[in-house]
Length: 125
Image (cartoon, rainbow, N blue to C red):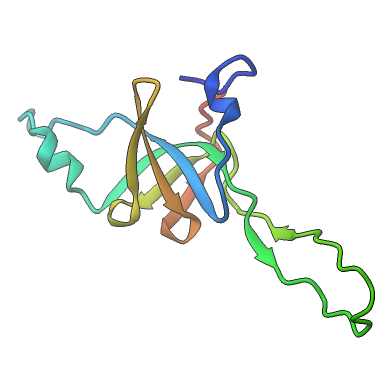
């Protein structure tokens, strides 16, 4: 499912340093042609999938004000994540939280669990 302005994925907000990924279909066949059961392919430590949405990033602490009588303005700034929508992500499965949304399977992983990003294979092209 692509991310379009009229679908429900637009209303999802990913928080912090988390990334929403749609896993690629696992390779369920060995090089010799044998089919592997889903339990084998799901237990792989490293998985690949497409980045669907990303959180705002890591919060950056605001500078301390030396005038305590002033009203403090809550303007939180974030250090953005490296992952972008449409990237192909290679991530550690053990840190992934699996979920189902609108009949599609997704995983949410912290950016630290992403090992590598590939921008040449884009989901949206």
